[in-house]
Length: 239
Image 1 (cartoon, rainbow, N blue to C red):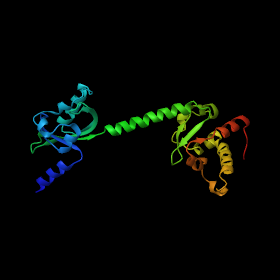
Image 2 (image 1 turned 30 degrees about the horizontal axis):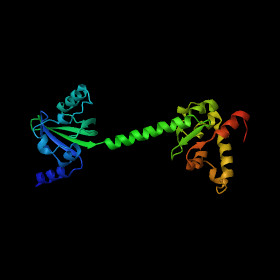
Image 3 (image 1 turned 180 degrees about the vertical axis):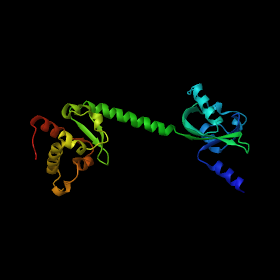
């Protein structure tokens, strides 16, 4: 029957699913709930999800959560809970109230997903980015980094000393966006000229209508300091 199919689907889910009554007392949980929390169904039946509390959320957090549910709206967010073995973990949870024919809340369904690994990966990337910025921030060269669309995603702070433009104002833009108002067209031409010497396998016509970053990006970070300084110091006209 359809009910049996639904039951099998809930049990087979790779997300933890918990069903409580209106008061928050657990009446059912699927096998993945045990994998996520360490508690089996028998241990949580008749109890509330408070057994998972880590005390890392404020009382106001839970007040807002229950206000949303009792208003017959779906709540979605992240929180830190504690497994049976005492280990804390980050979970993404969606809580949906279930109503009867009289539009009264009878049960609440919570779907949980472990986000600890994702959070740790994000923290590692953020830490790596901070280390990178600290490293390049102390270099004497001006460094620009771009994405695959050749937009700046990083500019070292000392670029303002040469160009008069703050590093943050480069982000999301290409060199040619500044060319007309700041004279970067000359810098781009110099960059192309120097890069052409190093890449004699590229025809001169292949550069037309493109920015220097199209060719520089394949080598990672774009260092244009030599041409920037040359332009600033000698105001060389390459036209």
